[in-house]
Image 1 (cartoon, rainbow, N blue to C red):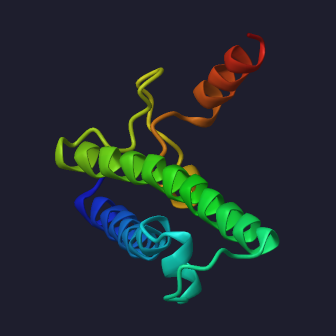
Image 2: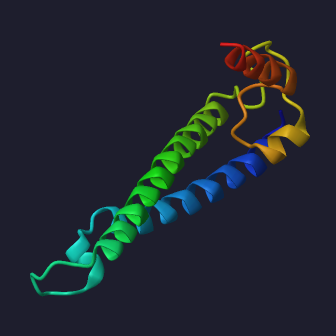
Length: 126
């Protein structure tokens, strides 16, 4: 892969990484707050059960998205590592070059379409 192409993908990966980190920063504020903090109420009186349930659900949802974002961040970092090692764009399954359209759509891809399909078939047949 040419240096210009690698730079294009590196910029794309870094932009996605920055967006994820910004999103995780926002989620961190939600995850770190208590029910009392989230409501803004300084009193020690109990809250309505429906409000507590909604707040709990929102924190759980934020945790799920933060976890998912963390996994995505790992894959982006691995792709950046492959760029530095000059192995980016090479399928880790068969060793062939990964199609440019696939890398544009999924810049953190480590497998070509054929190897990814085989991997998914193995995972669904379990």
